[in-house]
Image 1 (cartoon, rainbow, N blue to C red):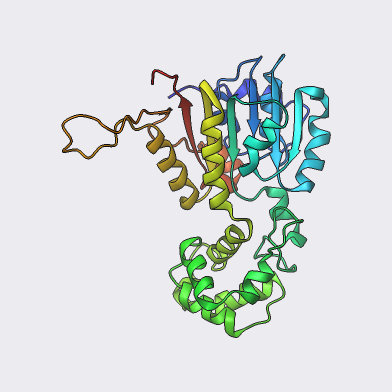
Image 2: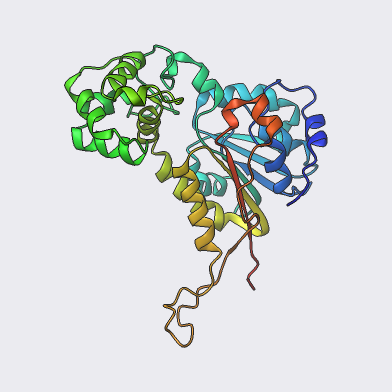
Length: 325
């Protein structure tokens, strides 16, 4: 595996906020940034990854996406020193192809995705993402979206609640939690919901190291923002946009996201998909991506010590193949 130049990237952020994004060094080095290339950060957040990319550009260009207006506004000040080199776009990243086409861009040299909830969203109690702080049920990454956590918790039927808690939260007590939520309506706040979740779980589950509401809150947040559907669409659009030799780097924080990314990269890296008993290939399928690292890149012990939120992070990277495969 490549040795990542941590010091060089730390130097590039010399005058930035003390916040360092998860797997910053590894993801930036994996993109192999060309000074004159075109790059896309599909998850702007605080702009830490974007600043590190922009530092490596001379005549190149960086386009940054986020559906959270607060993130766009905060990052605008941080990235202002790069001038026209950086463009900020308020948009769901599933719309990347259309938004780039509006700006005359049909191919790019690299794409970065840092998935999940950003620290500012978690830390801002009124956003309703945290099960540790009381706030109205919200969880919308784009505050202009119609669907909120309150809508799901108070209006979805038992079976839909059970399904998302089980599938998106991988919660083994999904049935009892969904039933307790339905019987406790109306539910108005995050701490109220957290207590309802805990009341539906056996005592042994409450003694686990992980907060008992974590998986259910994750499930509701994913449903509110259609995170898995958006991820699949963004991966498909990103693969088509990449120029030969370009790379896509994706940082995930839970197994659902990681499985989607792993499967997508593996499928695009396959050659023939004919049944094994076919004597010759008739499908004509050619691989379009090459998986760069056989196993995901994980945070170092130093990063884990410095930022406990990085403990579940995984970085996967793929490279676009030329027409010859």
